[in-house]
Length: 279
Ligand code: KIV
Image 1 (cartoon, rainbow, N blue to C red):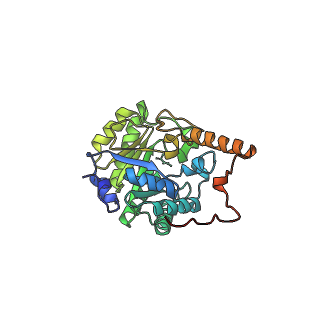
Image 2 (image 1 turned 90 degrees about the vertical axis):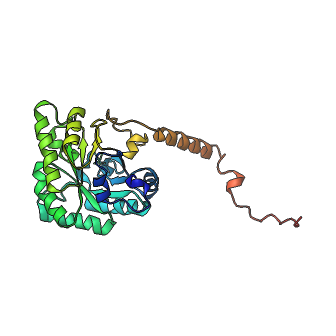
Image 3 (image 1 turned 120 degrees about the vertical axis):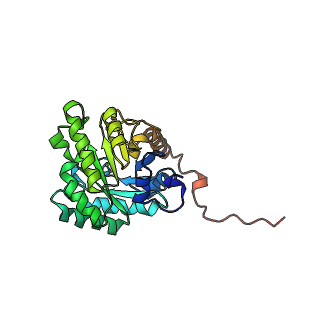
């Protein structure tokens, strides 16, 4: 039975138990209405810090704050009955050390109601992940391309080709040993992602990491065609909602300018029509 087929909320331990069985389905969500839809189909609703770029027009995820994550985290938690919310720790909220990370992870969990957080980094974050997991904070790790390090990585590149493969494998083993309940592999070459998936006892969740991972995640606005500023190769568009919205708004604007909207059916008469006799 998949974690998502039971009516009780999915927990980090359910995600761990899914290793090697039915693929985990993960999408981002940032609002209550989208969370309600994601809840019907997914195991995890990730409140990703991608919301900074997707919803707030920021040039990267670096300007995302704790307040933004809490606001959107609360909205998503309100929309979920079954899928597990996971909240991203924003840039600057955990890198100083385990104590800072615990303080902010506890705040994200307490103020949103989410049972887990995600943070970026491999071997250098292992001590922090161990500190959090030993104190009741389930952690989803994130390795490979870590967008919060875009300035040191030199762009949104594939991470793990040739000489880098051993480092990415070591990152995966380190976050597992530290107690992470799952790990996101972003833009990792598919062969390496497959080898990591085989080697680890925790589920791998791929984004641009091939089909061998234990699950997949996409940014929901990317796959719906709502966020079109970038189109990475790994995004499959399942809809073109941005174009549909553009057409609908153009039709509204034309009808308002032509005084075709509102029609009588959208207006309130000054006098209510008399009710006819009952037949
Ligand atoms: O911020 C985000 O949405 C993410 C996913 C793309 C994995 O970290």
